[in-house]
Length: 171
Image 1 (cartoon, rainbow, N blue to C red):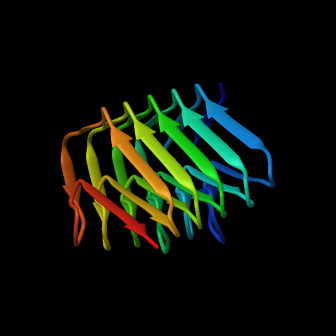
Image 2: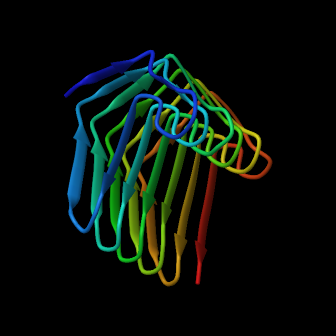
C-alpha cells in the first residue's frame, strides 16, 4: 500500500487521492491516510465508478485530522453509479474527521440497483457531520442493497440525524 499524508485539494475533491474508474474495478488496499483535506468531497479519498464499476476499499488506516470543508465524507467519499458495487471492509478509521455535509468520516452512495457492503470496520475518535451520519452515511437508490455488519462505532460522533450511522435505502 501507499501512504497519503498532508494532502490538500483546495479547489475540489479528494485531498489525498482522487480516483475515477469506468465499468471496471478499482482496489484501494493497505494504504495509510493521515491529515488530508479537500475543498469539497472526500478529505482523504474521493473514489467514483461509472455504471457497473466495482470499488474495493479494504485494510486501510485513516488517522490524524481530515476534513471535507464544503462537501461530504470528511475522510472518505465513495460514489458508485448504477449497478455499481462497493466493498468497504476491514478498515480502521480514527482521528478527527469532519464534513460540511453527510458522513463525518465516510460518505458512501450507489445509484440504481447498486450494492454496498460495509463490514468489519472500526470507527473511533471524533467524527462530525453538519448533516446526517456522524461516523458514516450510507445510501442506496433504486432497489439497491445495503449490508452493514460487524462494525464498531466508538468515540464522539455527531450529526443532525444518526450521530453514529445514518443508513438509507430508497427506490
